[in-house]
Image 1: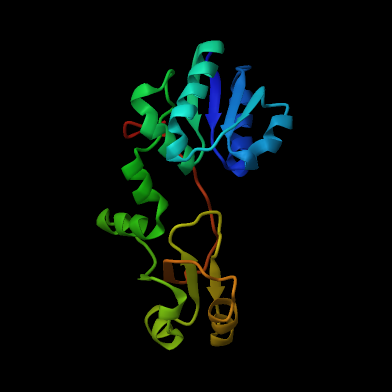
Image 2: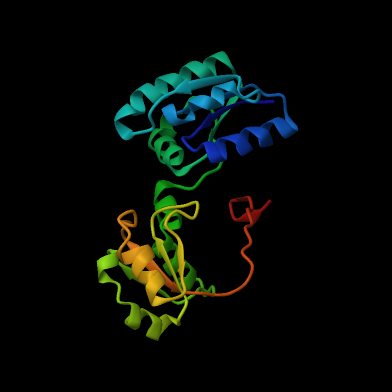
Length: 214
């Protein structure tokens, strides 16, 4: 049974990952994340929390922390829980002191993380997608032109954020002007505008290793 070194800055994901680990093992769980994850140290699932930046200029110190934890709590496995952690661990991959849980390369991550790149990937693979247009900013949007192409209900979203940040379903010109154009808080860039497909939203998570669905 390997102890876990869980790396990431997203509280929304750290909790479920720790819970998943604890559901099948009594492994010691060490968490490394920035100051926004400090509250995780009070969780009964967290045996130790270490505050540290995941930026590239802090890579050497992150490697030292990983080596210290993995030496003390061997055997260990390192787990990235979000994109920042995956990029940091990919930069250090050849030097890591313990096995790394499967995760995408940084190039694949860039393709999957950006909604426009992901949309283009789906098109290349022949998967159905809503009609989608890309714009650099909201000043480039013209309501009449958009609705003539995409229909009277539009979905506007940033291409580079997650967790429904900046996603708006626009059902009228008045709504478009008040929630997008006139809103000082709506300053995302770049933007995707999509046709609205009515129905129920679902979310599915799958684990595949070397192309095999596990």
